[in-house]
Image 1: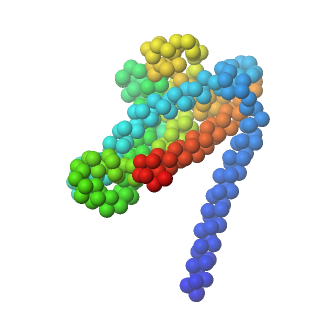
Image 2: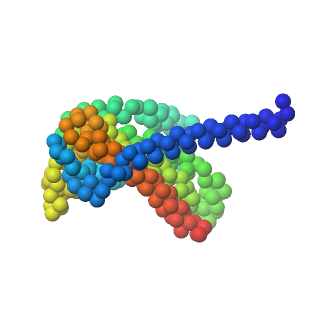
Image 3: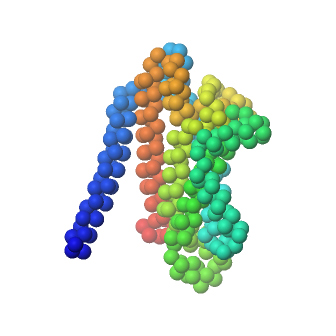
Length: 296
């Protein structure tokens, strides 16, 4: 076969596969949005859920999802950033310690979320005595999320050309100053993309949170800002049913008369938030890259 013809056929096949993937994703998103958006209103987004009556909302569950995301990222991002910098810039690639770290990351990345949830239940909920709480859920999600973010940070730093490192050292910067002021700003778009992907997994996670953050959403006292009070919105020691867990609970228990409408509306809101977060984070990452590297 003519090499040019073979190349055109292979290119066409790849385009066709990509188009099929986009069509499947688009159809799935459209199905969720068309089915759920008619049930979404301001009252639905702000009112609390109801167990046995119609007209319940997702206000507390939505707040819990956002708050849990923030707490998880506060814990996991510094750890993954430090691990990624170590593996990319400082680790001896032939040492046994580096091999052990990489093996641990591979094992953690292959664990199912249910297993991570059971681990979090045994360690954080029972052994540490945190109970069903936001901190238990955040720590479990950190275990679940750390391998992805660490690998992404490492790959983003490695993608920076070696001449950037040589230029920083030639200017008299120390190795750490070169990493901090030259390498990280250059790798920031890739790091932000990793944070986006990890945040999407956190926001939509349910299995690990059922066993750690709990399946109930107690009423919150919005005038109570004492972080040690379980009625406070900013307390990390209270139970917190998230939006994804609420969707699972509504579909599995079926005690809500309008459960199908609540589930459809909550699913649409979940998809919209993930999409909004992805697009806004990519925009912010590009702006930060232009500012820190004087590219804009």
